[in-house]
Image 1 (spheres, one colour):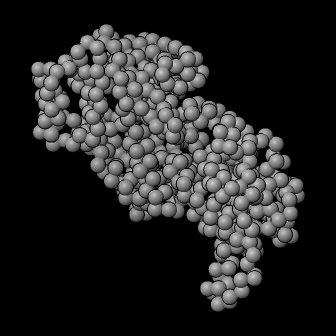
Image 2 (image 1 turned 60 degrees about the vertical axis):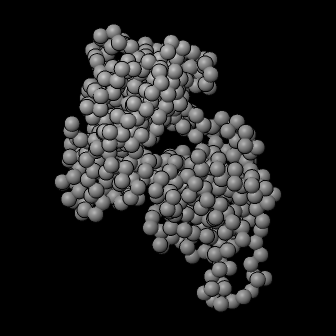
Image 3 (image 1 turned 45 degrees about the horizontal axis):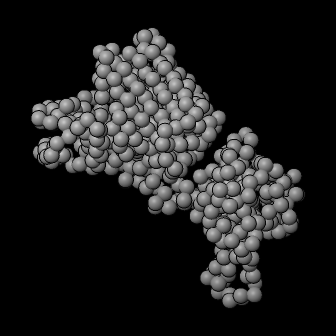
Length: 530
């Protein structure tokens, strides 16, 4: 079996490297210490997937060498140094890791807020560097009862809001792209009037950097703010107009500003550094040990999924724009693709029809779900030839019927997606899945067997007559094959049969499948890799 090649272009935490190195289907090339010219000449041409950070520009020179690349994973949030249109022209999917540094960014925001309110950095320097003990110079202000305006109420903004509530602050959120209930359910006020934010005591911004948000706080907005306002930016450089920010701080209109990001970095000559009412850090939003580990792990897992064609988590250049979809939909698209791929691996036969069923609010997006499910199914046989743009056309050419069924109400779950795959030989498999709060994906039904299964790893699906001793026999054979059981899920029906799904650490060889199939109680056994 040929391996998928993943090239790590920049340094990531060792946890991510271990995940990549331990997958028997992946050929890992760690080129983080290689000169960039050698990276482009020697390693990028053989890569199926590349993992990059800010030190590697995915530009025209990079893409010219990406002869067989199918995906690029940016180990972090920002993709300023990735030519996304250029990648799209070549059919390369670009992904980032947007949530791995969430807590680090949230806590840094709160640190800047506290530092601005109490002027800790300046008091620290006064005592430690100048050896001056003057308590009367350092009167700050309390966060309690202050009004905090949050611009952007996504993963980071919402968590800042929760923590601000713990400080007994009065919090108001502005984000035209969310449902108001996302804020009000947290006992946080929601507004569509930006002037309500400008009237706050403290303002913090947590938006992406887009044409709409660049410079969204400028002279006009600052003029509307109350005297002595505190501004925080731990999101992206340039969201605040830095000239206007400088003027506001210099005049005293803005009492303090906490800034972690700048329009141009490194920002060692930025005029803001000359002011004595600014707390600054050198873009440390993701700089925690936990964050770097999370980024590396998620980047590695996403790269493996992309290399195998199973899924493209957090893709930025799909034909379906993520920004046009509610936040809850994208994980279901990924789930639909995984389920489709799992169905194809189980049947291992030419497909006759793919039926995509969606229940609940997600049913509104059944067309998109069907596209992702089709990619999952066809990837098993076509691999590099299939993508989100051509999936349904390829299915039509192969006379594979695609059926879509949307139901407003869901059975037992808020949202449920189901793929029913019918093979040309008449075999049928039906798998259902859902996504719980926190983007926790679970397969909940396989051919009528109720389960609670995480869709990842190397799985053995063992269907058997439900009788004593079967689980022990299965476990013994897996142990004899030198495999560790990482998870074991069991579903039973009313007809005396059961389905066990076993996740193992290691490759499932053909010999093990044959031995399991030879057990007297066995009805069928399949292996799947997700």
